[in-house]
Image (cartoon, rainbow, N blue to C red; front, side, top):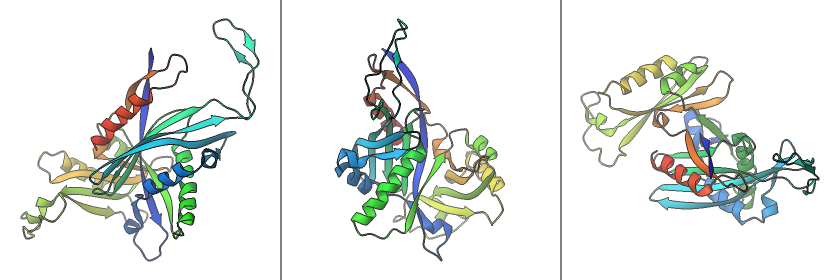
Length: 300
């Protein structure tokens, strides 16, 4: 039995409202509707789930399962993709012999892209983690797929199409290293314990029992400016050992202009899973991947 180190990539998926007169922070909300859209896709006939992607490829959502515990739902499944319009002869690595490819021109080798989604309504978050498969789907492919079927779902339900889906990659370098490498930092969410409300600093009444354990303060940069230095100060405070801050999240752009998020919650998360491969097909063991996904999401 051979095995492979599979890289795990992290994203968060959001809705961006088109409404005018609404602040940037209010326009962006978690994409909780993803669970209904996935159910809608699953009900479609297999061929109707297909979508063409670049490079003579097509993809579709094959299957998924979901488990809800309280206000947290974990979804685990996989996409299939294949490249058709390409059937050269095949060659045997052991003997060097060639033979005609038995595939039809409309057929292609199946590539699986495993994923898992955490929908956390308490934290107002939707995380998607996936295996990195060079021959499989990119996050852009997945977002295009979800966006298409999200539009179909809204039309089917006669709901307004008043938002766009967006994803933000979550950097996995050390937080400070990733922060310093950003071209610019536009927004920072700072999470702190609700007991701070009753401290000498704020002197609120102690009637905070109805509040969540964590409170969030959102800081935005003025137009054309970056709040990297402020975020570094916040991070240093978090690491001081005497801080009421429990988590920091910063959104901005990397040096290539891609939208990214860095989050202290992900600083020590697993980036690779050691997964067995089927000796006959070379496919990865899905059960092991899902088990690794489960462990990662349960720790968030």
